[in-house]
Amino acid sequence: MICVVLVVSSSHAQVSKPKEGSNQIDRSVFGLGFSAGLASGFGLSFRHHLPGDVSYQVVGGIIKVDRKLHYNLGVELQYDLVRGESTRFLIAGALGYFYSGEDGKNDLAAPFRIGFGIGGEWKNLESFHVAGEFLFTYFSDGTILPLPQLSAHYYFF
Image 1 (cartoon, helix red, strand yellow):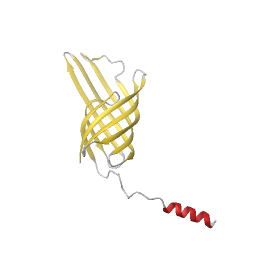
Image 2 (tube, helix red, strand yellow):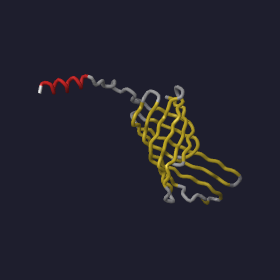
Image 3 (tube, one colour):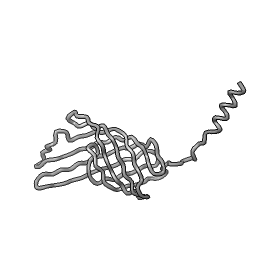
Image 4 (cartoon, helix red, strand yellow):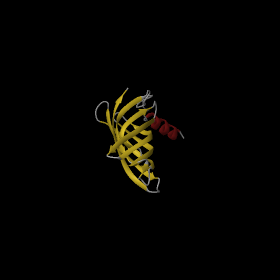
C-alpha cells in the first residue's frame, strides 16, 4: 500500500502544468485577407477570433463579365483544438451561397453548400497567417465531396 501511494504521488509530481492562460487568447483579434473554398466562398475575408477558442469568418466575392454575374457569400465557424505560438489546429463548419448567371437566374444546380472538417493555421510573419482546411462539403443537389480551402489573413489587435 505504501508503495502505491509513493508511486502515485511521485508520478503526479513529475507532471508539469502549463502556466495559467498560456496560449489562451484573452482579447478579440481581427483579421482581413482572402479566402478560397467551395464551402465558405471565394474573395475578401474578415476573421474575428473571440477571447477563448472560438472564431468566425465572413467571406464574399463578386465578379461580372459581360452580362454574366458571379458572386458568393459565406460564413465559417472555427473551434481551436490545439494552439501553439505559431500554429493552431481546429475544427470548422462553413455555410455558403453561390450565384452564377444573368437576368436573376442562377445557373448553378447546387447554390447552397455546407462543410465540416479540420484545418490548421500557421504564422508566416508576426501578423500574417496562412490557413488550410479539409472540409466534407455537402452541395444542395445532394453531392458530398471532401474539398480543401485556403486563406491568408493579416491580423491586427
